Amino acid sequence: MRRRQKILFSVILPICFVAVFFLGYFFSVVNLMSWNVFRSRPIKEWFKQQNAIYFDADEVDARNIEAFNKVKNVLENKYYEEVDFNDAFSGAIKGLSAGVNDPYTVYYTPEEMKSYLEGVSGNYVGIGVSVHMDENYLLTVADVFANSPAKEAGLLKNDKIVKVDNEDVTTIKDADLIVKKIKGIPDTKVRITIYRPSEGEYKDIELIRRVINISWISSEVLDNDIGYIHIKQFDDDIYRDFETHLNELMSKGIKGLVIDLRDNPGGSYYQVARIADRIVPKGLVVYTEDRNKNRNEQFSDDRELEIPLAILVNGYSASASEILAACVQDYNKGIIVGTKTFGKGLVQEIDINFTNGGGIKYTKARYFTPSGKSIHGEGVMPDVEVPLSEEFNTTSIEDIPHDKDNQLKAAIEEVMAVTKE
Image (cartoon, rainbow, N blue to C red; front, side, top):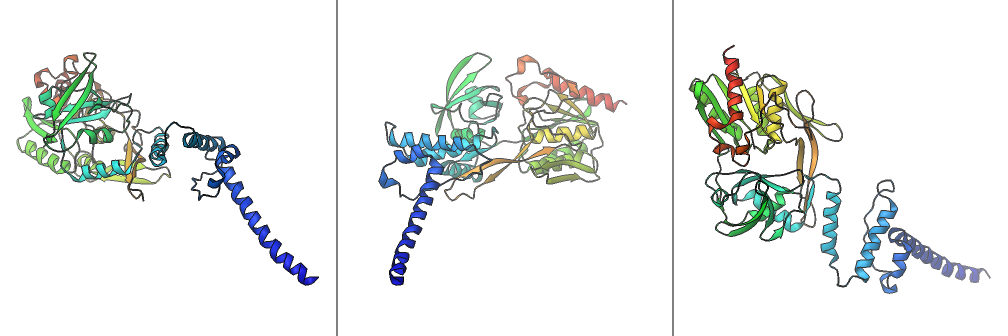
């Protein structure tokens, strides 16, 4: 009897273990995809290896998980064509990053990441414009560079780029992804479609890409010994160039200085901090703060600019431009002239450690002015508000004659008023 019980026990116990295992398996799978979805699958697929994405119960409503699996099941079994779920899922990852409603956070597919990295390490070959996303997420021309294909083709500031090589780009919220489509190999053609608000018309323009060599900074001495420095963008060498231009102007005996940051979309956080260091007295220049309140601070030394200063800004002055303008404003080291700035006060970082070759550009922190103000969504309000004359709304800053530039004239007047005190 005991032997019989022992044999039954040795048989029944493994069967129970197997039954429990399969019950647990079915329960977990059914719990992930819902019973309706599970039972609609062929029996032979019940035992396929499953991959799962996990969320804490308080992060995502279980009904949304069920809806995702339901959509996948419909596409898998009822869609009129066979679906490549790798491609479809890549779009779902993009949707996850887009779901945070931050235009500066975006997932790059492996192909897009490869293109991005090649663009960072290679030469700038394109059409010769700087761009930004407007409030409707349309890629907008902020500046047209001299001696460029864009200038020769007649592109204007404020033109909206809506197609690249006949591909609609109005649904792409990341400016870098559209710019990568415009850039390419020297002497190759690119066809862009623009919408020109000033004329209410669409225009197709074909351009030949070429190497764009841009001088991001220029300077001159204006009437009444007023120095003028125009910074188009804060590239990785801009502090050294700024120091060179400033020293040359100082050697010519300037009595005041105007720094023009209009249409400057930003650039290097560390470079603009060094420029601010040259202008303001010893103290905090700018700091960033992440979600855990960890701060990264940039400070200036004892050296400061000892002549009257005005800084020109407008609605296209963004990011690093706003750091400089806000810092000068906080320390009362100069007068800010023009119109309210763009209002981008976020710091981005790129994570390329993806096994599939993709990557994500995401917003890591916000930056703050020395007084603790966050500019993001707010911008910098000028001390002296002066709108640009309407006749120059589509004109690059460098193409506006100084004697007709009412914003520049206002900045000069502010500097001269201080020199006479």
